[in-house]
Length: 336
Image 1 (cartoon, one colour):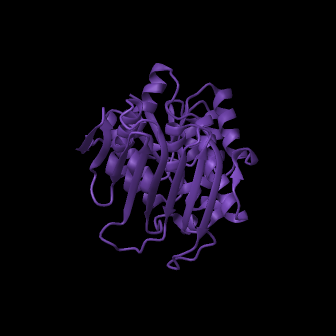
Image 2 (cartoon, rainbow, N blue to C red):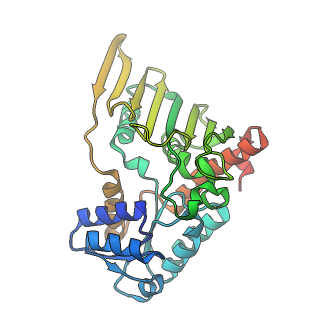
Image 3 (cartoon, rainbow, N blue to C red):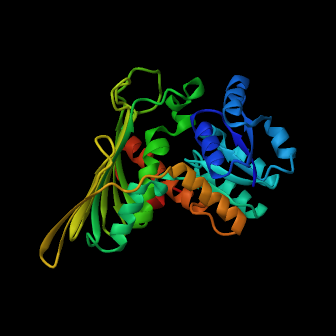
């Protein structure tokens, strides 16, 4: 049983509260949010207690702090919580800059507490299955990939913070980083990034692009095309969708969440074609992700996504932003 403080009572704060309750009903939950009505709403829903951040830091019974606040607030909250001796789970992206991310990682190492970043795609069943099939050699060596992730503009952000690139980092840093992180885990280090971006939606005032495309070249020689969008019209029957296609030397794996959850494997074994359709057993990835964090705390083992891994995924996203701005290919070594 743990005493867990959730910072931020927005969409992700609700997701975390639900997950922690599912993991263990005995967990004590504390909700921190500058808007009292939001904090009260989530507290009443999940049997939590409303508190201030200062109260959380001073409360020795609170052992875990979950950060579900806007990205530009992550560094200060994480560093203060770690200095206060709390284990910290921080939603992705870890930060807006490498300087901030490294400060958070240093604070975690100095404190001796666990620090995990929420790259939840690693916990989605259809992505776990890709790793399993790739590891088994069913499609040979993966040499190309194509991924899409997008929907309408995120309207749930307080004060429209997603629209300000200095607060959200834009669609590459906030959204496509999911795919950058998964591809890094699957295909290894990224060597170069070539990206372009546009602003397509005029529904909300913004100083940030809302549709981006990036080509990643990996040190292994593999190539990946990643597209992220906040520009799909609001109010559509499907308001968010993902797609992936992994091409290997022996076959390919495809999945489209927008139309269905079916995964397709097309390959050849000993010269004989093999076609497989399956629907990976569903489980709540957010619950599994937070469960893995709690187990790391309880068993004193390395977290699944540590600060250094989050920093490397952020580097790829920042390289995409740089490439889109400069209209040229960017070596990952240029982002430091």
